[in-house]
Image 1: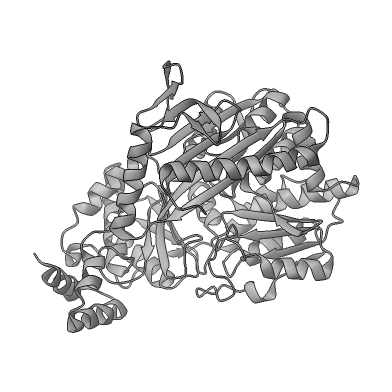
Image 2: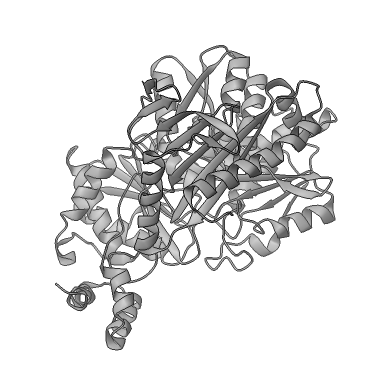
Length: 569
């Protein structure tokens, strides 16, 4: 079937007048290139669910795709037993089409026989994860594209217990989606109404989070906060004020949910410029701390004032600061566990060793970190904190996923306690550096466009596997770890199993303790480089060590990209 025929077939069953109009215009114009973008491939369902630009066709996010994905999810759930008496939680953010997509999810699941419990209004993603576990649901669905561009939307799935799905569930759901026939064959109840999840669930979530902080703790802290036009604003300001942080100012221009994200070029707090309005407000107020969430509230960003203005902390700095704080503050012994991912800083392992607690390192993604928490519990352990370098933090296991709301509260408490001691978050970072050395990390990303971008990523990784460098930036490579093959090979040829599931990640370990890694993003069209350089502080001069490490980090990044044949960023 040619592109036009496929498009006409899609048009005949498309339930959305908006995408029908879009597709009809492309057909009328004979725009073969645009049709090819929409019909030459389809969005793939994976462990992060499914995500992509809004529009018509199987390669875009639209109501027809959402109905098919939901039919596939229902099909996989039915493999575990009949729908009767089993519930699914449904939530949504405030992006374009999120409300319509959520309605479609509810209509398909209800028609299939499941009880659906849904939030009436847009909610942060962590609340959906919490509700899935708290209500004993067999699955949870959140309609969100997290921190993707404004033109995107997505569909995230949680399984019983409130953790993200992991292999082989993703492949099993994908197979069910592929088996869906005509859209007219998908069960659909247009009159379906979900049971509304009440405020009592949010209150239960708040109560568990507030139990993590000291009721009598210091609260003298000036905070500036922004949800970046997302849906976490009311939850974060509510929890901070309940905890006693009265001096809290919000970035008014970014507080209300807005799917256009008008004040930022890209709605990701990691992106340059995204926090500029927060920095301006913090400067005017003389604030102590800036906090920000991404649009669906599962990531946390923080910034501190320095001699040259406000500086956003890296995800590694946030995660390690919180780990050190929680391990110091809460009693416990070796049953405590902290965890991070293979592309995060190795500083966390040093912190764990210092405190005599367990340490777990997983593949990227909170589906693996949540699994590490479950494994720790199965062996009598207790996950204190897990984090990934992309600003995802899980404080305890109230939510078995990254949670930017509880992380915001924990950071505020830490900063307030330090201020009462006459110290800052920067001082706390220096203390870690004195003990463990300066662990400087950075990321470089290359944006991939279309099929050519996918091919570029595959070719680059294949070249690296076939011919890894013997040295980078004048430092010899001590070992290479190929996570797809599951093997770490030292420079002398000795090999060892990595013991992790296969994934498209390649890591180079240098003789001076530095590390350079490469992988394609699982949620965005990016090829991502991860860099880390460790600089000892033998003389106690942390500032001098930071001055030494900065050019080393830049040189490593430039050398790695040059070897890969990628543009310097």
